[in-house]
Figure (cartoon, helix red, strand yellow):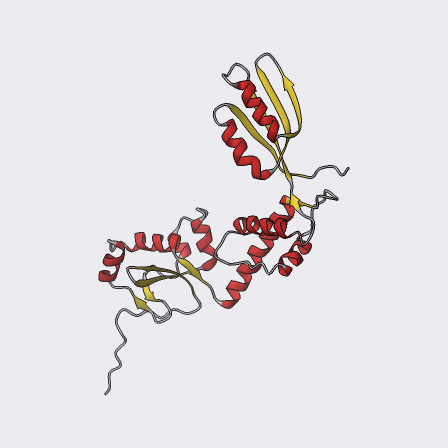
Length: 247
């Protein structure tokens, strides 16, 4: 009677998502639940058993080829499977089925459009654009949404493009901030002068010991404002995206 030998080191898996990482000229893969990978990366999910379909490192998941200890040692300088899996989950590329990819693209696209709608206005009407109009403008500009990048980062890239091309009249909403300066601090008058160049429509108040201003700034000036205030003044964000009154 003929004997059928099952190849050693092979495990058959179906209907899985994969995270792949290339290291030491070899590709390593883990089989996981795709919706759990982002939760794990964001620290929401901490239990590996909830993320993985099987606690193994593979050379090829679809063929069930498990990575050898020699390959693991050479690439990762360890054979600790859990430690290697964690590195792959954090640094690897998520491979999705076509259906999963489309669902993820739709989710990221909707998040991105919502962010843009909240952060931008029509500078003439001082009103926000609905996500549908922003989506139409981005289609005209051939802006491509990708799976392996956070919605917020893609939103910021899209905002730069929209503002540069002006397919629709669009500008960033202003941020409303509050700054307080201790007048007893050396150089406070020079600091206040710098702040006044950045803060629009500032409502200021002053006592013997403190100067305070509540006003609007352009979001692109926020980092500069933080640097100016560093250890010299207190800075508080009151509103990330203000809708100004129409003239």
